[in-house]
Length: 622
Image (cartoon, rainbow, N blue to C red; front, side, top):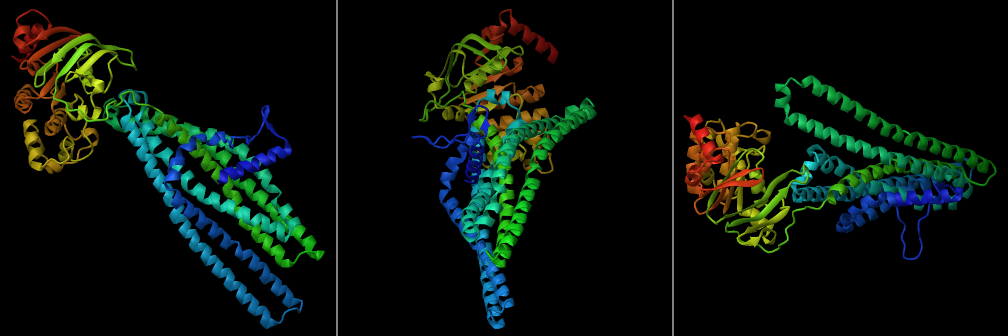
C-alpha cells in the first residue's frame, strides 16, 4: 500500500513536470475495465494468496497501526496549546494558577496519548510481524514441496547452493516485504493522510512550503529504486554462487586435501569474495543516497517552518505554538519520509528475490502422477521396445530393448560401464520416462499406475548409498518409520552390518557425518540394504550395491537377500557374476542393447561375454 502511495506521488510529480520515460508518458491506465498496473511489482503478486489467507490478522494489524498513529498525532497539538498558554501568561491574559492548571492537564493528555500509542504500537508488531513469519513459513514449505516434485533433470541443471539460497536468503528478503514493509508503509500512509490535511487547516502557507520537498523526494526515490532493483538481483545471484562454492568445498574437502588444493580453493574464494564485495558495494553506494537526501530535504522543511512561520508570527498571523507544533510535525515526518527510501529498497529486494523463487516455482515436473487412485503393485515388469536418451547429455542409454520379469522372479543385469543397467532401474522407479516404447507394471502401462503406489512398492538400493546426518538407527528406520528396534537389528544382521554397528561406542545411536562419512563405503552400502529390507517391498532394485564389500561378505549377504526376497520381484545390477549366478534370469547388456539372456548354466554353456566374464572372475578369486 505504501508502495502504491509512493508510485502515485511519483506519477503526479512526473505528470506535473511532463517528464517522459522513452517515448511514452507514465500512465496508470485507468480506462474502462483496467486497473493500475505496476510492472515492477508483478512478481510479488504470488504473495497475494498468503495475504488473503491471513487477511483477518493483517486487517487487525492495519487497524491497530492506524490507531497507534492517530494517538501519536495528539502530542503536537497539545504542545502547541501548552506554548500558547505560557505565551498568554507572559502577556498577562492568564493567571498563574490557571496557566499551571492548563499545563498540567495538557501534560497528562500528552503522556496518556504517548502511552496508548506505545501500547498499540506493541500490538501492531505482534500482529503484522507475526503474519510475515507465517508467510515465510508457508513460502518455504511451498518451495520445498515443489522441489520434491521436480524431476532429476532439474537437479542436474541447477546447483545445490543456488537451491538452498532461494529457499533461505530469497525467502527472508520476501518476508521483509510481507511484514516490516507493510507495517511501516501503513504507518507512513496514515501519518500522511491525517497529518497533511491537518497542517493545511492550521497554517496553509507554512504547510505548503513544508511539503514542497516531498514530490522532489518521490521522483528521486523512483529513479534510485530502479537501479536498486537491478543491483539487488545481482547481489542475490552472487549469494547463490557463494553458497554453491562453499557447499561443494565442504562436501569435497577430502578431495581438496588429497590433492593439496587448499591454496587454489582459497584463491578462488578470494576472487569470489572480491566479486561479492564489489557487487554489494555497488548496491550500498546507491542505498547511501537515501538518508542524506532525506535529511537534507527535512532540514529544508525545518528552515521553511522557522522562516515562514517566524514572518507570519511577526505579522500576527500565527501564534508561537503553531510554529512549535509544525516543527514537531516536520520531525514526525522525518522517519516516515526516511523510511520511504528504506521501504523502496526492501520492496525492490523482495521483487528481485521473489522473481528468483518464481523461476523455480514455474518449473513443471516432467514425471507426473496421472492416476489419482491407489493401484496395487504385485511385481510383474515388462519392457516393450524401450529406448531412452538422457535429456541433459543426449546420450542414448537404452536402444529398443524388450524383456519380461514375472512377479517373484529374480533377474540380474550385467554389462560394462555405460551399458544401460542403472537406467533400467531408474525407469522402473519412474525417475525418468521412456523416450520410445512402453513399460508395463502388472500388465498395466507404467503411466497408468499411481506414482506413489509404484514407489511405495519399491525398495531401492543405489550404488552410491546416501545416508543422512542422523543416527544409524534412524537411517535404517527411514525404510519404515514405525519399525521397532528388534526389526532394525534383524535387517542389520541380514545386511551383515550389525557386528560393525555394535563395535561403535554408541552403537545404533551413533550420529553419522554428512552423507554417512563416518562409515566406510561397504558399511554405507550395507546400511542402505538394511533400510530396503526393513521396508519389505514387493520389488527390490539393487544397483551394484555390493561393489564395496569383499566376496565372503557378499556371499553371506546374497544368501540372506535370497531368503528375504523370496516371492518378491528382485532386480540386481552388478559387475560380478557371483552376484548374478543364482538369479532366475540373467540379462547381459552392451551399449543399451541386450547382448545375452538366460540362466547362469545356459549362458555359461556358450561362448560369449558372460562366460568370459565368469572365467576371468573365477581366475581372480582363485
